[in-house]
Length: 127
Image 1 (cartoon, rainbow, N blue to C red):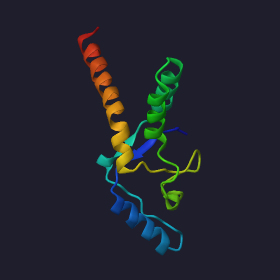
Image 2 (spheres, rainbow, N blue to C red):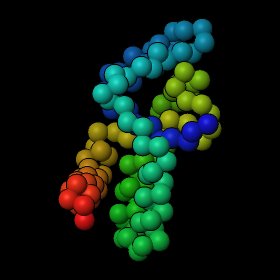
Image 3 (cartoon, rainbow, N blue to C red):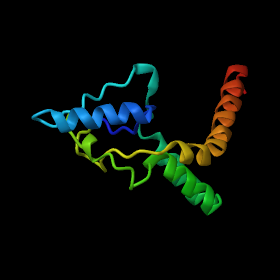
Image 4 (cartoon, rainbow, N blue to C red):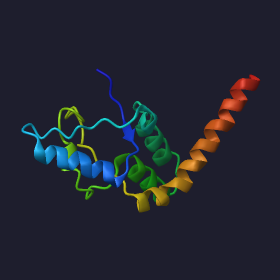
């Protein structure tokens, strides 16, 4: 069994179609199937990153933004995604991070992308 943190990039309209499907089907099946290019499986790396930020003294606000980016908002009203088709029941059920919140965390995540590229180049150079 692999523990993963999975992300999906979907529109509000897509969520509404899934909600309607769950309401209309006998098994509450949301027909969740975003395109592969809109899915990201981060493994369990994000939790290690958050832990590292905490123990290394990163600003609490930065840690909170990273946790929010990973965990979503608890009031996202996506209970219909708590279904075997979408989620295995192992950890917290799926949560959504709305478009406004994505703007809040994007700048911090762009720093992580820049750091990733920095280390990729160092590895490429053999440094």
